[in-house]
Length: 175
Image (cartoon, rainbow, N blue to C red; front, top):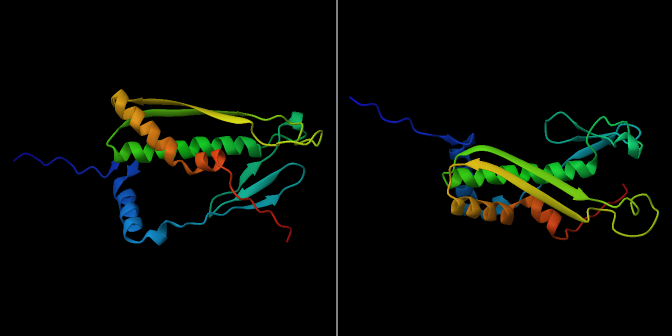
């Protein structure tokens, strides 16, 4: 008697049941979609700090030596670029999986330009990125049309991409 094909529960190392379950829960209970995320940062001397998120080991932050740091970790603007790349990677994995597209490899190059004049207090102006760009290297057997549709879905639904591309209210208060 021929054996039945095994039931696939993952594609691209994504748990299909978990993602499908979340989608169904949000459809049934829309309020579940309103989430809050948090981090707590502790200064560690000099330009060093550590961000604690959930139960993970703290993520170190520091500035490169040429900016006065000790170069013991990525700096905050590099972390923003990494956050965008990581968010896009999640988007590709989730949406490719939902579309039945197998990803053989995925690499995302992210860069941005900052003029340090405002940060250093040398002149007023915008202290953040003037621009941010990402280049996606995706290896898959999917058709070019399917890859383009995947790309459009990912870029139009990236929470970090949207946060960077659109003004967001930021409040910093002294406790």
